[in-house]
Amino acid sequence: MTAEAQILVGQIKLATDYQTNKTILREKIQSDLHMPHNGGLFKITLDLLSFLTTWPDKTLYLEDTYQNPIEIDRDSFLTAARQHYQKVMNYWHLEHAELKKLRKL
Amino acid sequence: MTSTPHTRGVVMFACNTPTVNYVEMAIRTARLVTHTLGLPVTLITDKKIKNDVFDSVIKITNTLTNRRVGQYKGGEVWKNGGRYTAYELSPYDETLLIDTDLLVVDKTMLTVMDNTVDYQILERNIMVGEADIPPTMGITSIPFKWATVIAFKKTKKAKQLFDMVEMIQKNYEYYCKLYQIDTFNFRNDYAFTIADHALNGYSVTNTTTNIPFSLLTIWKDVKSIELLNNTFIVKDGKKSYAIAKQNLHVIDKEYLLSPSFENLLLRLCV
Image (cartoon, rainbow over all chains, first blue to last red; front, side, top):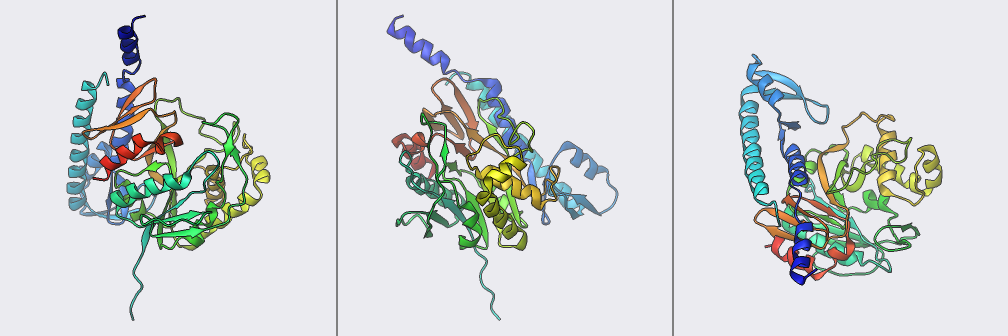
């Protein structure tokens, strides 16, 4: 094998695995989706956002990540949760777009 | 009446071995921690050192003789005992106890500290590019947690955790049999898991003492880590990984002591 071919083979071996990178990024996003609120820590999910949107009362109690009931002001929590969710998803989208460009390193 | 200010800081243990300069690693990690979290760092070690990066240095006598296999053929000396003294020795009201091979580059740990009632232990550790290692301490044992990151406050329950870890370390053979642990060299991960398990009523479904975030671990030997925009490009000689900038647990001690890592540190600490 020529020197050039050897370099090429080395580079191909170093090629990054898009699927692995995608999985790693998703794990980070799962962590980033957590948001502290009123002394509790919540993972902002679509379920939680939907629930808050439809809940009729202004004040409610929600179980947080640490299995504690936390008093919630529905409107302020929903606003904060939406903003947080949007911020994390935007970040995910941007980073994912970068990953797609990084097929070879 | 005046109240004493509430203190918060990071504690690391580092005892040099014939093969690894853990203290130098701790100095590098402390620079990163101070830069990223803005918290003081205390080093607990068995040698007398002075370095301005540390808020304080506490000298202990490390008597545990342990060995582990890994990077060095035939195993290496591993001075990993005495971590239970962190509760007594930490000068802070709120402590983040971390390994010297943890690169703290984001503020996730501050959120962990904000939400710690008594203590929290890392539960989810993802090995980059590796199949998941068995999540239990033995084939028939319970899932284990990672002593790589422990956040605690000086409360009664946190003290019970560290007291229990002391008891486990001193009677490790017994606990290995009780919990059907595969290996007999002392591991802090296992000791803290057993203590946490007992303190939570022997329940494996109680998640209230788990850090709800995952940590990425680079298990293989590292050839280089570069920072490209907001992404770490990690090369291990066979593969490359693109990892969004986040805290990393790097097992390769040789890399962490290399000039290449020093260059990365300079970039991260700007």
